Image (cartoon, rainbow, N blue to C red; front, side, top):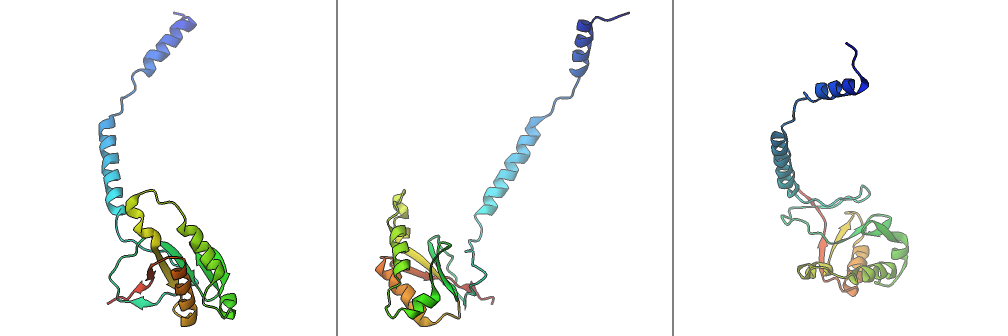
Length: 163
């Protein structure tokens, strides 16, 4: 018996119709459990990324870090949120207490608009990541410049000392 092309197509279609249906309910359950696991584990310990060039001092501090503007002071450079604003050699050669490029960058960041009212207090907070070997005079200049740029809440990043 010879089949016409139309009959062949109909036979193929009926043969492919016998595929098994996938049960999506169990797959949705697995994804739901996975999402809950990821959400619960994402709110764990907050860590601040420290550049390799900066060796932070150790402390017994128990307070968790906040998300603020980060000023990194290494042995060679001063960075604000990852952008180089000044070199330590130029800052130390300057006799004044104010670091002009740092103040200009902090003024720019301080003028950003705050979307939510509860985040208004965080706009005046700054975290200084200073290498443990930098001189105090440099740290004093950075703190003085931060205060002149109206950043009143100054924190220092440290490594937690293991007990």
